[in-house]
Each structure stands twice: as structure tokens, then as C-alpha cells.
Image (cartoon, rainbow, N blue to C red):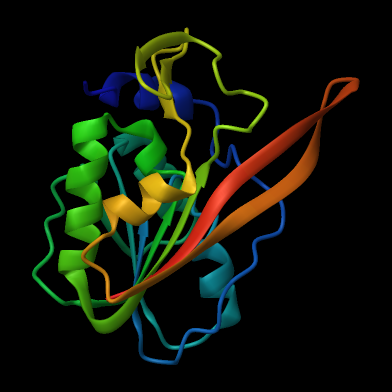
Length: 202
């Protein structure tokens, strides 16, 4: 199931839909860095502001989001599907894969995880994050697969468990995973959010 059109509609009028502070890992100067599903550049823009000499690449399936990103920070931007990455083997030192695989089907998630490992250099790492099955939004929308729901706007959302993430990246040399929990205010109510986070080494 492809939801390209839904993401084009989503980003129209939303130049940076996800704000807030971002914790960035230490990245050695000269690294090749890819942000999958860069959207408005939530990770790439803070990296650019650091002024460290990295080669930064943003990739998204949405042409609209890439144009918005380009207006904020012209650079290397690629339109592609995370399940079919147009990069050669072993080119990136680090791949950010935050809240991207959850928008793919089960088949797409497997393909994307395989692609992430393929494009990483030996010893490179991927930073994964995806909402967990304990997140308050779990179950919202039409169920299309186990743990996956299609919302009214046409976007698909999958909710992970730790073992699933380990299985997706089974070809990694090592993987450490855990959970991140926080509260988020929506109008007048506080909602409980939770995601699975993982650092994957090739």
C-alpha cells in the first residue's frame, strides 16, 4: 500500500509540522549523514546550524516537503521511497530513521530496514525511532495490518514492539533498543506518548 498522495496533501501548508528540541548524537566531522523522511528538516536543520563539516542528505517521498526543505536550507535532497533507496552500498556513516518505517506496510518496513543496512558503511549506525503499541494513538483509524492503521487523511501508521524492531534489523552486528515515554498536551488534555528507540550498528 502506497500513500504518496496523502503525504503531499499533509505537507501543503505545513512547512515544519514537527517542532521541538531534538537530541542529536555526536557525529564525527566529515561524516555522510542521511535523514530518511526528512520532511521539513527536523534533524538536518539543527545539524546544519552546528556548522560542522558533514555531507548531509535529506530524503522524502513528498515533493512538497522537499521543496519546503530546500527553501530553508538548500542542499542534497532526494525524492525516493524508503523501501527503494537510490544510493550505492556502504556510503553513509549514519542514517536517521525516525518515525518513517511506521508509515510503511509490513512488506515496506522489511524492505526499508534491509535498505538502511545496505547503504551503511561497515561500522556505521542507524538511529531508529517509531511509536510503540503503548502510545495513546494506537488503534486510531482503520486496521489494515496487525498494529497498522489507516487514518482518515490517508496516512498509514504502524505501532512497534521491541522484538519487531530487532527482527527488522536482524542483519545488524549489534542493536540496542529501549522505550521513550513522554506526555504531550493536545488542546486541554495530556496524552501519554511512547516510542521504541534503537541504535543499530552494521
